[in-house]
Length: 387
Image 1 (spheres, rainbow, N blue to C red):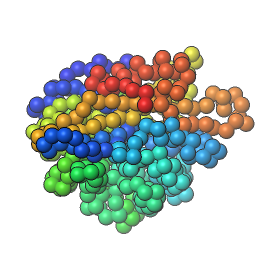
Image 2 (cartoon, helix red, strand yellow):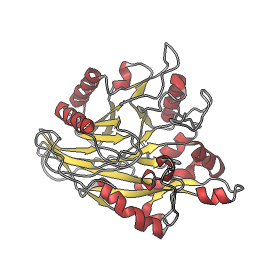
Image 3 (cartoon, rainbow, N blue to C red):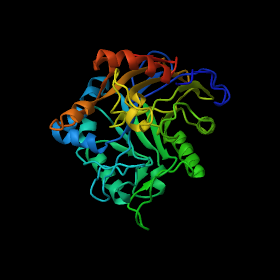
């Protein structure tokens, strides 16, 4: 059971309003009337876990099918972000299930993600080195070749912390990416790619200061928390306090594979938003859940929790009004990962079929069961919209 939303007393001084955020971010700069006024919209979602069966489905149906449900939801003006928690290489280490699994996927997933409107991929996460540093380097190359940019990883260690600047109209938005942990090492003493690490606190603080000097809006994409934790920990809240005090306006969290609440508060610059976890965007997790099917409670959470199939495409519009940053009322499109696991189970001749859709396009029983759960996870500050 999810904990009810309560005021987050641990956020920085001045943070008094709560909000729940989840899922994708896109940015639009639109001139508006008034002195020193403009707006940028960020659209963000959670983890892209391209598990073995997700890759198998894409090989049969094409990657476009996996993500096509997102295309109508992302505008050209948006700045759209998701966390790529799978190397786009699958031939360095063997791709295997397990705890934790070793992930890997073909590079042709990248053009499909770019085609639906993504601008940025978070590349700092615990699976970044699943295909060693050479696999991360190939991931960065695939993302760049598709016309997107990696946040939180680079060929040089210092550059992994370098802010990625995106411009919309007259406004500059800086993205920094860090991960709390890594599952394995780079695989060589001279890595071909590096990941931004959250424990490198001085480096992260310097990156925030650099971003603050270059940009109008500063975003930190952080991969943290623990699997299936549905609430933000004291550690997350404390770190969010620190980063906002250092100059961060928007924190995009991923990592636990379920949605967590979003906080709305204030900094000396104006409004500040913390999305503690945007859950999964697409994965093979939760595949055994169906509205009327019972699952043994001892089954692993990764296969039985419907929360791992819940998603959100979070939209946050920031306005500048007379020198202050103002976040508009928060919206999110609830998402659902459709998975034909049981049809495949009873008829092994069927191909796997896994794709992410707006919840409004899911079966009625799924919509009834999951819309309320997604709303509870994100909190009262977030309004769910169908598109």
